[in-house]
Image (cartoon, rainbow, N blue to C red; front, side, top):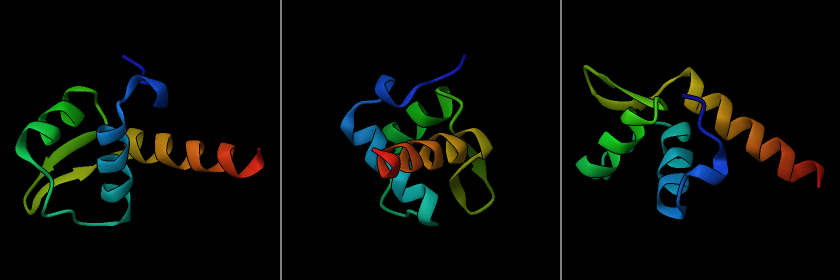
Length: 68
């Protein structure tokens, strides 16, 4: 299932951007589960982290905003 930026609510977008910057220990468990269910994050030994699909979504969104 491909997820678009507009499919995410503002809190999900914010959480994904924060995960893109590195560890996000304040990430709430329910938010982590939603991002995992969307296929944008994954469980890791040190906690939940952004995966390749999530990173690509954030970067493409940021680049598109920069071009506007």
